[in-house]
Length: 464
Image 1: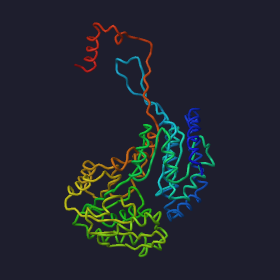
Image 2: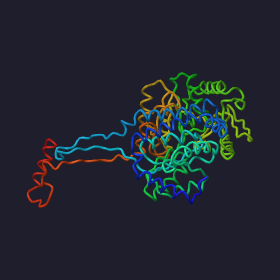
Image 3: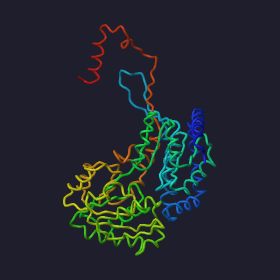
Image 4: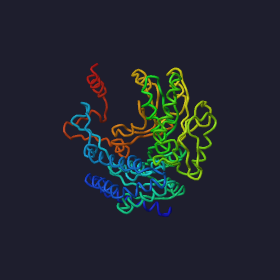
């Protein structure tokens, strides 16, 4: 493990490597992306084993949400990098002729990626793909709360990439603090809003731009015009995936009162179909990351009426899939993001009530609506503010790489996935190139009698 007093040396060496221009070569970037993809292939079993040790992830879930997801991002970047890196021509006004203008994407330099524990491999590697594609050097700080996955990431990167180019630095809180004291050219952080504020405050001291992928209480609105059985299955899957430890998991339901009883019964049935009558024995149901978060979640099981679940096994950090009815907006469970397998149910009579309830609270990372009513779909998109909207499913909007993924307000700032990742780690440099041909003295002193020609030119330009 790297000593904290050596961090500044690592960053200095990365700056020297970036200054060499090596990372700006498109073929170099492609080769590094291909290398990363091959390394994921070669270490797939070790990655999945680490995820199981840290979060009890099944092979299927680990493969789907970590290995395959990362490969898809890499393949997409390799397919599009030539197009992304090309200068984009823009038009110039007549008074700038003869001249040419274009926007040239340029790497920012040395970037810091701080990844979380809930999807510890995926959320370290996917931002790295964007950093590599854009031509940066990078330092990755994995979460210490998932130590097995952190070790695998460090092994894959540090044993196979030049440390002056990409480096994983493991450690606890003190390591993160030391890193945040340094000057980077961009910081990409995924985690909770409280730590996000600390990251932003540290970045402000160096005027470092940040991307904050935070989270929040993502609401799920259920209208009467739905396929109840399919809705219930998709809600249960999205909520209890990764034991509810997903930043875009449905945090709470806002259910039309007319359909609440039928939907509640369907969700209970769907959950049992997914994980059996005793989810503790299901090979597909994970565990809470540590005892601290287990205790935090147990404190949220009351008040309210538990209509499903509520069982806990402290020595396993196990909390069964739990649904709580008769929830009031002032209950503790409605204060902060739950980030666990507990689903509170609230009711509404008119859609306007649900919209008002959401808009009175911090802006969520995701908003879900289940409704076949196109008018209601349009109203929700237009009258609510959230990082993203997914209609008639949960989580799945993350899989569309042409959709930038990110938050707004308390749920974060900036975005990534696909080209958005490339753009996040790039500076869009504006360039104007003029010719010496047809020069004019109109702009230069002395200005006597020249203003009328400027005004005439503006009038012609604006067709006045």
